[in-house]
Structures are given as structure tokens and as C-alpha cells.
Length: 492
Image (cartoon, rainbow, N blue to C red; front, side, top):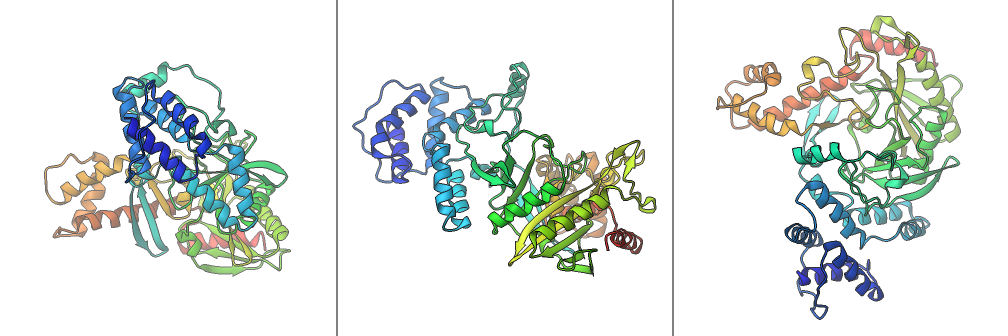
């Protein structure tokens, strides 16, 4: 055990995370976390050091075996974060290092912070690697399909303990600044090794952090230092373009600000970004038009299953004003012929999902039109995945899905394996919800061959495309596109 501790500290020294004068201090802090009171400091570090996360696993195993913690996932995660906090710089140092590098290059700054967040296990690289991921070709470009297996699901013991735990209001939510360094408990994730870069944005204090369970490269979150609800307005576009101006190698987008079409956290103002090229970004313009009062801006409709207006221009102020005009016009626009009503019983239904990026030296802004109205026929939402595709995806279609990356629930991993057994006429326990879909696959692909996994992947991709089409307010029909152009006439 002592050798593990020596080696763990040595890796921190080699990575220059622990200075020589701090070696004894950090060793004793690690001993305290492990509940160990005896130690042999004369041991030398191993010549061939194990990987740090392998050493971390062994340290956690020791803590469980010695009775310092139980084997429950939450207790393991809390201790893991506390141990990795020992080799994580203080917030002040992280911010100093970030902005010193930013003076040379924004990319150097984010590279530093991203590498730090991976090295200290805040970004759960090993869990993320468990995700199932494949590409599905479509007429709109390559759609990405991910079955999310990275977030560990709580077992019944943990759920029971969480219910028994005293509820607290600190931190207020998962995105509040107060999460930085928070130990965590059964009702709140471990955040001891969490750091946030502070940044100015549109005259406000904001922060930059990475997502611990990233869905794509350098998946980051920009969040307000103040706990305030999401609200799409002119200031939103000012902030989005301000972010890509500060970090031109990143895209950034906001979830819509209404239920059903919004994200899972509407109570804290935040955006998501990163370094990933989504299919929507590469989609072509099918119809260009002039925007009233904005001659310098290129505007067009995007060839995408959802309803997207793309703006492109070098004048930031004009881009902000143009986007605000479209949002304000859309908020009050109705067209009952295609089921779009701006309001019912005083409740507003129209909003947008905006995505910003730099394209060369020009700002580019995609505005995805959304509507969250429900009816008796579509109780989950008219422009939400309909009942016949909910066996694959029934959750909200948020920012990431809008751009062409499906985040599918963990249940599908096992369920699709049973579908495979069914297609091969093997004994199976296929969920009833998949039966009609699986029958269609079987009828279309007789005889069934060894490429059954490819067939299932293709079929899942086709369902995701349908999901996006369901979420699109203007359908890919002559009638739908004509109605889309009718709205465009209100802003020309």
C-alpha cells in the first residue's frame, strides 16, 4: 500500500503538479484521506510507474477493504475526487495559467484547461469510452448516434440512502459556482476536483468549465456566475457571439428556454460549446433571402430536418440585431395550417435554439425554430418525437440532438441486443415497444445475414432522422417549405 502512495505522489511531482517542498504535505493529506496512520517514507518510487487512474483504483480498493468507505458508488466517487483534488491547482492558479496562455492564443488556454480537466479525472474519460457510438448516413449528412453508457446508474441501496439523506439547498443547482470543490453526497455529485475559469461576458461575470460526461470533443459549458433562469433575448445573442469572438475555435449554443423543447436545466443561465463539427454545420443553404434592413448579412434556409435559418456576417452588432428581429417575429407568429400557434390561453409556445460559430472571419448564427404546444393527439408535444419512435427516443430534443448527435438512453444497449436475437430467430426477451419496428426490419431484409448489427444501426439512424423531422416545425414537404417561406416574408 505504501508503494502505491509513493508512486501516486511521484506522478504528481513528474507532472509538476506537486512541488518538491509540498511532497511531504501532499503525502500526509493522502494518508489522511485513506485513513492510514502508519507509513514508510523511505520507499523509492517504482521505476515503471503505473497509470495514475490505475493507482487511483487501487487506493480506492484499499479504502473499501480497510473500512474507510463502503463500496457504494457515491462514496467511491467522493473519495476519488478528494484524492484527485490533491494534484489539482487552486482556482486562482488555474485562472492565472489560463489567462496567461490566452494572451498568446485562445486555443493554448483551452488546451491547458481541457488537459487539466482530463488529467485530474474531472472529465470521466474511462466512463465516456464505454459509450456506444456510430455514424448513420442520411440525405441530410452523417448523423451521429450515441448510446449514453458513461453515467453510472445508482443501485437500489444508493437510491434508498439518497431518499433518507437530508435535502439541502447548497449548491443551489448543478451549474452554480458553489459546486467548485464541493465534496458531494448521495444527492449531489462529487466536485472536489472541479475548477471553473472566470471570464467576462457582456458586462457580466461568467465561467467556463468542461462537461464531466462529454458527448463530443472538448464539450464545455459556459455558465452565469449568478443563479438565474434561462431566457432567450437580445442579450443571449450578444453573449453567444461574444463567446465565439473570445474563443473562435469553439462553437457555442443555447438550449431553448421553454419546457419540452428546452434542455434539462432551465433554472440556471448557461450555454454549451466545444470543438466538434456537427452535420448541421456542414448542411447547405437551400434558399437564400434578403433580411429587411440588414444588407450586409447573408441569410438562408438550411437543408436540415429541423427548421433552421442561418445568418452570416462580419458586423457583430448587425448580426445581433438581425437575430433579435427573427426571434421577436417568431415569438408572435402563428400559422394554423401547419399547427403553429404562438400562444394558447396566454401561454407562449414559440422560441429558438441558437448556435453560434466563427466561419473564417465571419460570425455564423443558426436559429432553429421551435414550438412546444401540446394537443390531445400529441400530449408530449406536436413538435416532439411522436409515439411510434419513442421506443428509441422519448426525451426532449435539446441543443446537441438538434445539431445531429443523438444521445440515446442506456436501456437501448441491452434492448437492441434482444432485437438482434429476434432478427436472427434466436431465443429473445425483446421489449414489446420494439416489436412493430423489429418486424419491419425483418420484412425488409430477408434473408437475415451476419450483418445484423449494421442493419440495426441503420434502422436506429433512420428513427433518429424521424425524431428530428418530428421536432421540425416546418416539414420537408412542399406544403411545409411553402409555409416556412411565408414566415420568411415577415422578416424580408
